Length: 301
Image (tube, rainbow, N blue to C red; front, side, top):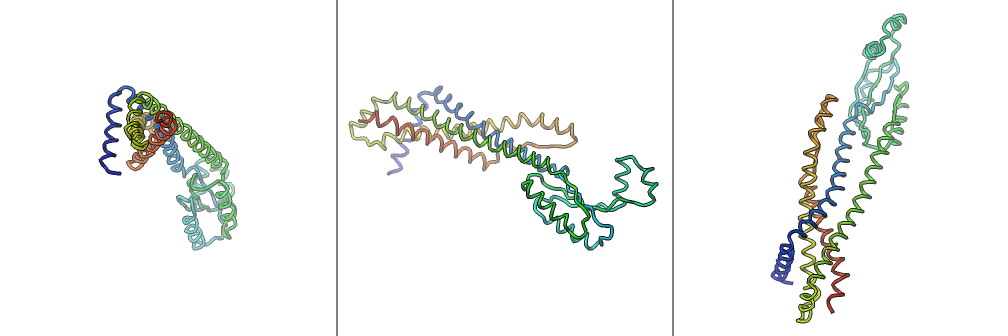
């Protein structure tokens, strides 16, 4: 098939869309909204996961050490912990710092002084990325650490990590389901649009068939119509998501400032944006293909 024929079909598709600018614009806008919704939710979920991953100071495991643990053994265990999956940082808290922290937060200085000696053990505080691995893997990891020779006991609260991971998993699955349903809706929207174009050009199609035009020749401009509208809808959806996140950045900055931190929102990268355009183009082509396959056979004798 020559390039000239393809370019001619592409020009035919472009001219058809330009002859009905309002209908074409409405179709592109409808498709863009359909694409922007799941993509925006995916991007928001990705930002949420980045935010939760930064809460490593809230996901901590305290490993209390035996009093006779040597500095060499503590240093070796610390290096071992730092190489474990999901571990962000490991810090050593000696007995004196543990006592000072306890007195500061508990306000029991007088009671501690009556003991005559420091009863608190040294410890290793392990900070974790709560989304790096499953809660069951974290629990198994903590159990393994608690059996180290120099570890007296381990303290952790992983229930909130399990709840957090369950919420993220639920959100991810819900977004996938929504994306599939909206992708199906996009195919149906495009299919209905192409069906209307076929009905409007029924006489032209029949004449072309009578003079010897093949079904592939007749079908090609309609497929290019779906492809063009899908591409334009993808770029518009990319723009919608970028604008939405730009508008949300101000309130997010204000909220982050109230907590004494900062959290820049990340919209689609260039690669992700072009992937969106590619997917939207494919869905536009697929919708056209379905419509042409169903309705063109009824038009061409």
